[in-house]
Length: 634
Image 1 (cartoon, rainbow, N blue to C red):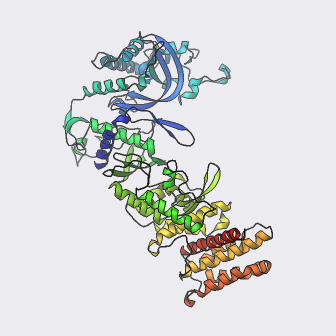
Image 2: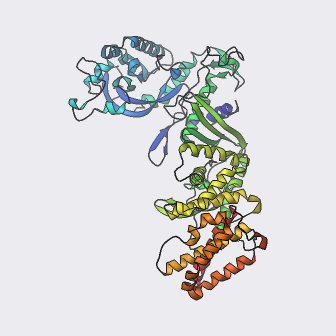
Image 3: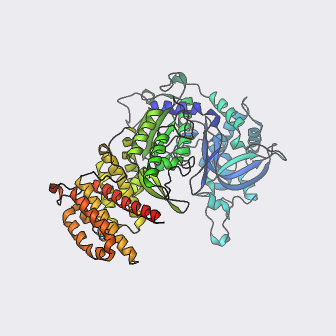
């Protein structure tokens, strides 16, 4: 119940957002979302019908827009042949009084009767609204399909029934309605509005006054009070809980117990309320808050939702993303490495800013010091059941401290394309990037979500990164010839270095070259880097561009470093001759590194991932020195 109570409190802390349409840019499109009012849900509408205040048909158009609509406990859980109407907006079979006339489906005759009786009851209550009365006065005439046919919104066949399918014999241009609905015209969802000439007026589906009136009206229908397991109060109870949590087509529920004959729970409990009993208000607020948070900041991969939010400040850095991803819009280029700066100085400044940000000192978003943070993972094993796979609540300072430990532990230099340009950043890779480069080149969404789920406790609970993920990243980074583009391998190398650094966290590796480190793996990596840079420079002077021997033999080098090193070293002789006196610095480095070896370590024992840290740092050090020499010469 703790996660439901957290969501319930989150809703109460954000009442000013209820009914407010917010937007989010996903890169491909802009989506709208809102914190739903109590007793309301969303549905994609296909037809918008406008009536006059006197209840006369005014206009109609084909749309495909998400619509907020009032609903009941029963209509929110309808499925199959359980024909229970919503209260205002609904499918044609419920809102069209002439539906049977134009479809011949006699078994659905009662749908309109139930709908109109329900709407009449609301209109005659003290919580009615002029717009609702106008819609009721029009709908009760039972001429909706006839009006839509005359308006060329719906189309009839030769038997004057709703046309099942549009074919080319009827015309080349297919009417909009056949593209808007996924099935027949009969499945179209209709929403209503009221037209006021020369007046600016809230739409019916976006009118907060109507939201509030319906919530209060439906509250009068709830009578069965019981102990709420979440709030601890005696309130109207509910057995059917909302669905559509991850998207408008999602039928999976967090709480469901509709099987009283299959011995799902009998034998342990007499009825579902003995398992859990949640009040209507708490259920609505908790589920609506969850929908809002998922739309607002949830990360969904193959149906699995990764979510983190603050109780009073919902916007917080997500554990699944790198911090740059979340905060780049607030702090543009904060971690961007400027190539003209001294590398060590830049790295120190970046590390300091990074530390400040993660410590919650230098951040541009508001955080209450007494706030709590909740981390949740959701997924559906079946189409109807949604499970909470992971849930933790932490004090916000603890959350930031865990983020800090993770991101500092995995910090490395990465390249990323921003607005079409390659830029270098200092930080940790996102979970999705780790999954991509550990199990690439194109891992399935199912694999990515599994890796993300396994990495989450590494951040929140401080667990070690699963060894197979680290080993996979090392193995892929050690096989550069398997990549089509060099930048792809460079990214895989950066990700592997991040994971290896975190894996050997106690040894406190950094990007700076450690010339005192005598670890054999680290030293072999340094030798490989010198050979690589030497050959690259020789090839560059000859205006040649191809993979070096160090890169080509890298995979074999990991498995048998001594034997492979002899092969690589022998192949360097032509390049040493070509560079002449300029090769002196490399031969000196070979000697300097070899002197650091313990003679017993100079063998063919396979290398660990630490060789990648030695390789990366030595290569970076050589390129940095060259840049400095170039500056000095100028």
